[in-house]
Length: 163
Image: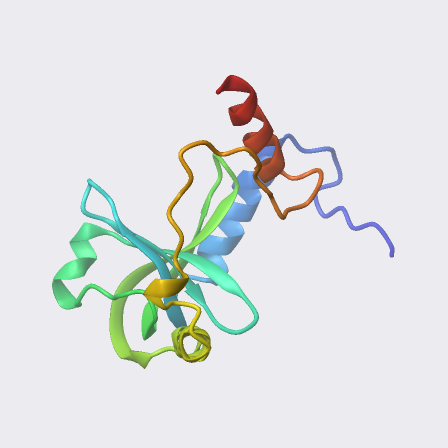
């Protein structure tokens, strides 16, 4: 693939992020996006943060307190239609969808799929009270299913060494 350098010189990270921020602001100021709400978390400042998802992708989203007067708070699993703009936070290189208006369209298919799986496992008896065992007083062995080089295994090893 041929190299492409529109600037003609080496950029600093700050300069590159500023170009990305300005380009995103210019070309993506009015978007309407449909997606399923996931990871909804209101902040102490009053803003709402969550992820909009479909079956193949995800996009971080934010609703600032000043825009909330015209909408109901969504729940995880709600399918929404949101209007807003893309915003690129240059300091840490994060792209988000800043929502100005939003309406709930219904429940999303991802939540429906999770509920179907729960019903399936419930029908197999996996959630029955008689299957539950008490947590042992002294844990002798644990198992971690993860990548051998991932952060999860490093965290588990560090914590077990400390304790």
